[in-house]
Length: 310
Image (cartoon, rainbow, N blue to C red; front, side, top):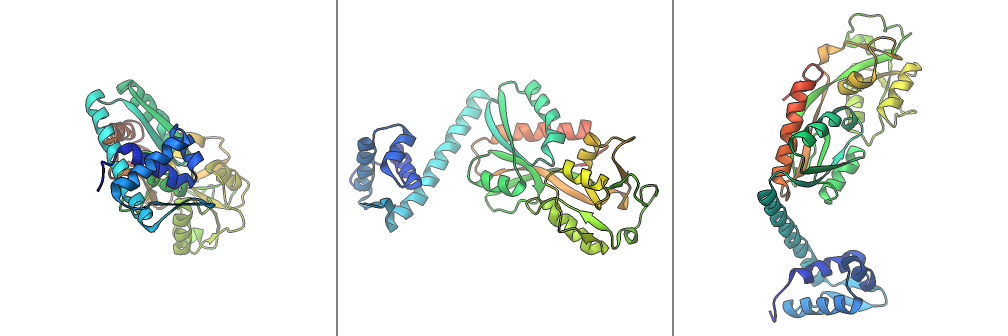
């Protein structure tokens, strides 16, 4: 070792690895290209390794560079943990959290959570972005979200989860469907029936597909809903039956004069798990704990008759 390694050198090196181009890397970190080149040379000198091949193809990492890159990312992640922890200790429950939410849950649960957070923790700012669950999981691991509200399970050794509630899936049929006036249903009543589901990017698709196999029902492959509203509208047109999440039904399906009928099925034992997920080494532990507690209180106080609260 012939010198100290600085955080700036690691930041610039990661930027160069990401952009594969000195000029673009310099623009990303807000310095001149010669300054960035000098910092990369300084890192190579401190390590005694050649990290970057310089040529017509731009900046290409050497095998040593790829090894150092992995470690540099870990070091910078730990610095963010330290910085976030310091903010939590200094400011209490304050700061900005980026939350991802699946559109089959967030619109029907988060508004009350956001109002409660604003009331109880006015210094906390939560930025919410909707995306399909598969996208949310990828973006959480990549650091674009600090936590996500999603259907469980989320399988990753790097992710920590807490279940908030189990949400029944309600059977919906068209108002003029032969089953619409039935007071109770058995599994046999659904055998051979066409069932509608969301696209495969949603865990609900796989859950409904498995249920169809169990019931002997037919999952329609020729038409998949892009949203719960689309699924309900297709059901209203008698294109098939559907299973709609209870929070959605509570929010969007009128008890009287609705476009679909909601029927009891298996005493609400067909459920999906809903919870929060975040990176295990998140820099915002105190903020996430605050959001988790508020979400649990909202579920208990406002939706205990709709979902099965943990």
